[in-house]
Amino acid sequence: MPVSPVRLNHAVLFVSDLERSVRFYADVFAMEVIAREPRANAAFLRLPRSGNHHDLGLFGVGTAGGPKRRGAIGLYHLAWQLDTIDELAAARQSLLDAGAYTGESSHGATKSIYGADPDGNEFELMWMLPRDHWGVYESSAPIDHLDLAGEIERWSGVRTAGQITTEPATASDPTVRS
Image (cartoon, rainbow, N blue to C red; front, side):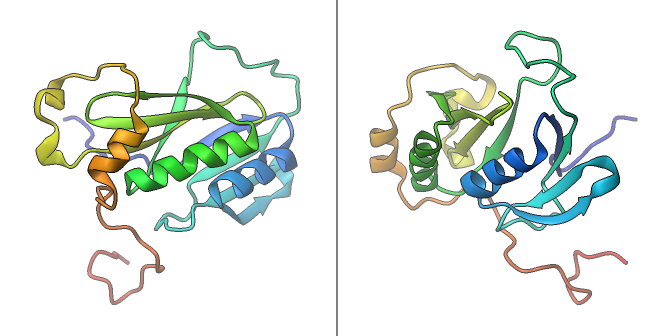
């Protein structure tokens, strides 16, 4: 029987300098450190609107692992979904300000901005069209030029990330199991 997850809950990255990476994700993504594990030289971070315990784990391993390089076998990038196209535009500027912007593209149903953290770990910030507008993109994922200004003109204010959790779950929440 196949496994059927709901979504990716968190990712864990090996980084060369733990504190530098914590600062990057705190500054660029507004993540907060919710736990540290000094014995493993690790930090666990949460996104401001997340309902997860943590969204990202960082394990400082020094430079012994060598530099990351594009085309290597293994993880290529992580994708973080944003709720509006307006947030995607703001994220683009944040990445530019941080010197972390690496590109952008339209994949039809999704609009994406790309960046890299201080260790070269790539990530994608993306916004998804409303499901009823996927059309021909239902079964395709092109890599095309992103007309961000045009997308903002068409989709500004349209939320597509579903329910965003801003409050911690409580025992009275029917979705919480004990």
